[in-house]
Length: 100
Image (cartoon, rainbow, N blue to C red; front, side):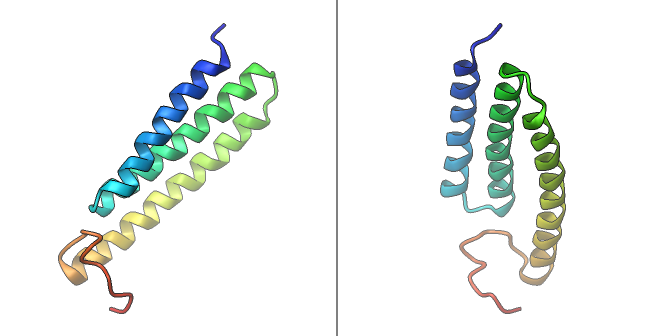
């Protein structure tokens, strides 16, 4: 059986990659993908420790988080599509006004 520390290290690396993507990128789609990478890192931890301790609560949490993440992506892409139609860009630096 694989030690849980391996999963923690892997998910920590994924979390750092996602955080770097959120901080460094100016493209809204890349930022949205980076947030999804960070959610995947959290899900890996939930599944790893749920399997290690033989409880299903972590896997149930992953199911709910995945469902919410799918809704988040759908809403985020709809907002980005609307912004692109209005402003002809999805660069976050150029989207500084809150009003349309």
